[in-house]
Length: 124
Image 1: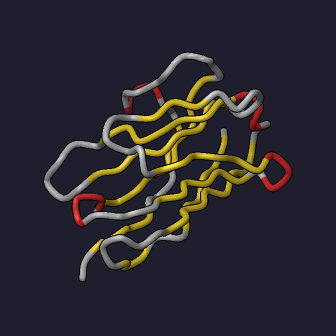
Image 2: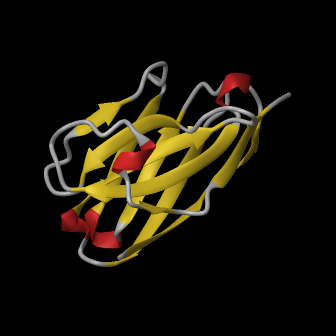
């Protein structure tokens, strides 16, 4: 089982940037696809992005053209660079691990391991 710990959230003004990190430990990361989801208050958890750990194939959810997912294999760390942040980006952001695949996994149920989440608040 892989363990995931997110960090990097916080309060940022509209138009600002944040980089979220997700440190992974446990099983070999080559066995997984890793992704980011977010959940705003009183809303469902929404797919943001995923990356295949080995070949770097990436997929993004809708309306997140300002975000970039990446990973550092040597550090076993997943990142989400978020630019030009808007108040609508305010949410709890989760890192998740799912089965190794080159297909897009956009449902929460596709992912079997989750971090505890890191809060991102965009407000002036």
